[in-house]
Structure formats: structure tokens, C-alpha cells
Image 1 (cartoon, one colour):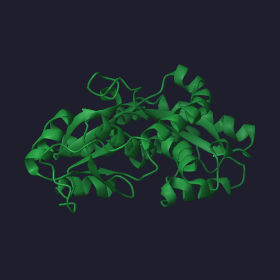
Image 2 (image 1 turned 45 degrees about the vertical axis):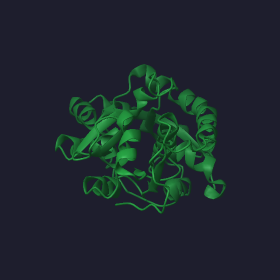
Image 3 (image 1 turned 90 degrees about the horizontal axis):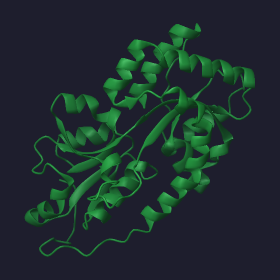
Image 4 (image 1 turned 120 degrees about the horizontal axis):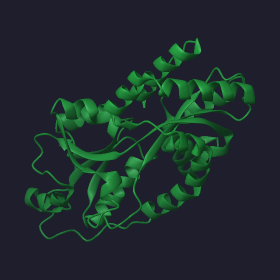
Length: 287
């Protein structure tokens, strides 16, 4: 999110005349950042860089988050990204399908990292375990940066992350991709589930004036049309939205609320499968 939004903010500054600055406000699975935006004046000078996790999953899973999806108004779509199952380059498996047998050989449960329990990545990891008929010792992190550092250092075995967060590590050869989750869960191996895809967008508080929203929308479209912005986003693994995606973004967000609510409940209702013979179920810890 940070890398993608800094690219877009630099483009927006060039086309709008105002300075667009990126400010990271962590905590409570994005809820603190949302509340910061909701407290601002409705002049369009504070924009939320939001995604499925922040806009839909956090208020769905945390009743005390203090906001609902419809407290935010979509300004425009920044992009969409795939989710990847990854491991350190030295990890002794090259595919997701190899993990159950690897656990048996190692005689221990594999550790799986994700950037927070209110995320699509967490849901994907639970789904992977179910489809592979195995279990992972799940390790939640506060975001993806430390997660990837620990993965490279072999402190955890695998992780599920958004593609842009790991692009640099893959290019340097520190991390390898076990599967593209977005397509894998829709494949026969993944059980023909609907694909995991995640959008990112600009949002403002509902009280923001229509004039301010329109200006932000025009600025975002102009920034995304810049060739160098498109090239940088593509290199990060973030798909630049088409005009059709932009026109349907409000409807997309609205339709995704019940869709991800259903997916969340399905993921949370998955039961651990019986362990394979030879897999230890004694005390587990990350390496």
C-alpha cells in the first residue's frame, strides 16, 4: 500500500498543483487511519488510501472499530493486486502442493505468516490449509514489512502477502513464489473457489463535498494516466484500472461487502483437518 500510494501521490502532485503527502497511521488494522480521515473537514484535503481489508474486513470483524463501510465514499480505484504464497529462496519446497509432505518429513507444523487477522491474507492462509488438508501455525504480523524480513531470515516458513509488498524481495532472489493465490484458489488444486483479488482506492468521509470529490477523482485519473506512473505501478504488481473499472468502482465496493462477509464466515467456519501420520502435534513455535 505504501509503495503504491507514494507513486500515485507523486503523480497527483504533478497534475493537480497541490502537494499530496503520504502519511502512515498504523494501528487497529487500519481503523485509526480511517478515524483520522473521518474527523477531518469535508474539503477533500484528507484522503484514505483504502483496500478490502481496511474498508470492509476491519469493520466486519471488529465491532468496536467504530465505523462502517458506508461511512466512506469511494473517490476512485487506484489498482488491484494478486495475493501470493511465498517462502524464502532456501525453503525446501517449490509448490503449495508440496507442503503437506514436507511437514511429515520435518515432523513439525509449518509456520505461516500474514499481515494481521483482519485481512484477506489471513483468510487465504486458512483456506490454503483447508484445501491442502493440513494445518499451519499461523503467525500474525503488524503489516508485511517485518513479516517479509522474518521470512527471509527463515524465522517463519511461508507467508501470504499482496504482490506489491514482496516485488523487490522476489527480484533480489531473496523470496520465491509458491503460488499465485488469486488464481490457485480458482484452480482444481485449490478447489475451484472464487479468486482472491484485492483492490485499492481513494476514499473520503461521507461529509466531503461533491466538488471536492470530483476534483480528487479527476486528479486520480490524470495521475494514473501518466506513463511513468503506470510503469512503476506495473513493476510493483499493481494493475492500473481501466476506464470501465473506474466507472464501476462504487458498485464494486458496494457489491464486495456481502461477498466478503460470506467469504469471511466461510473461512472462519473451516475446521482443522485430521493430521497426517507422522506429524507432531506437540508444543509448536516459530523457528
